[in-house]
Length: 122
Image (tube, rainbow, N blue to C red; front, side, top):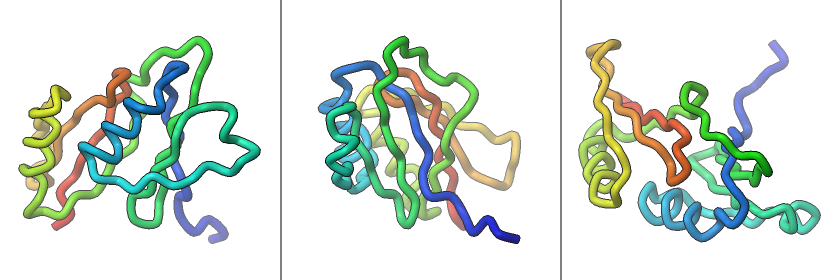
């Protein structure tokens, strides 16, 4: 097969989202911000690294949050509850889901309402 993996997932956000994106993705989730190429920096938004993959937060003029489509982030099994606690303390929703038990996972939302799934990597 020619497809080797996923390079990045793009999430949309409203104009002026950069500071809140940094607070949430870097500050709360602990992802590493990466510099956008100069040719794209003027468009706004911010990019973050999660392992080998990236999350790109891009500005969308007529923004509406993605309620169903979402990235699923892997979390070390022994840290999943810690991440849920950090999100909760930061005011983000935490909704545990046991439909795929014994897989442990929960959903949250970024500051603009985009759905994000966090899954324990056992």
